Every structure is written in structure tokens, then in C-alpha cells.
Image 1 (cartoon, rainbow, N blue to C red):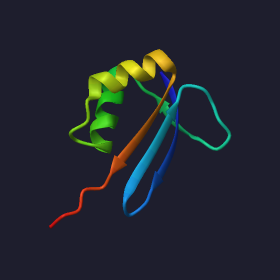
Image 2: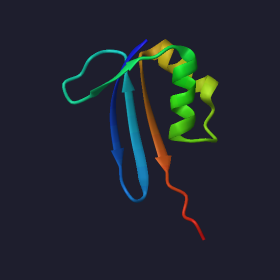
Image 3: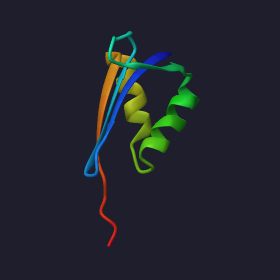
Image 4: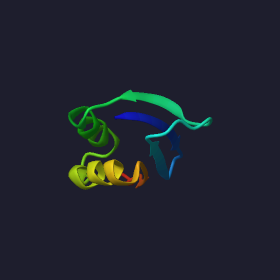
Length: 73
């Protein structure tokens, strides 16, 4: 599956936008198979529901992930 990405990282959160169609403000991530996609999701957030997100990306053709950075005490 060919995937384009826009990744915004701030001190409080990270917003990752994935799309299966080319967009002018997105960067080409690559032609990822499901295994590579699962590995990418785990790199983004280790406790993510990977299977659900893979299915959503296949179904809709895009996926937006909002990850809140956990504060270390």
C-alpha cells in the first residue's frame, strides 16, 4: 500500500496523518505491506491498537493519529 505522511510533533502531542493518495503537503512514506505498516504503528506508539488502525487505513484510505505525550514524573 503506497502511503503519504504528514507528521507534526510538538512538546505536548504528535499528529500523524496518513493517506493512500498523494497530497502536495504530504511526504511519501513508501509502499508498505501490512507487516511494515504494523511495525510503523508500533514505532509511533507502542501501546496502539495496531490491527484496528491497519483495518481503518485499508477501509478509508486515510488515518489521522493524535498521540498525547505522556509526562514522565
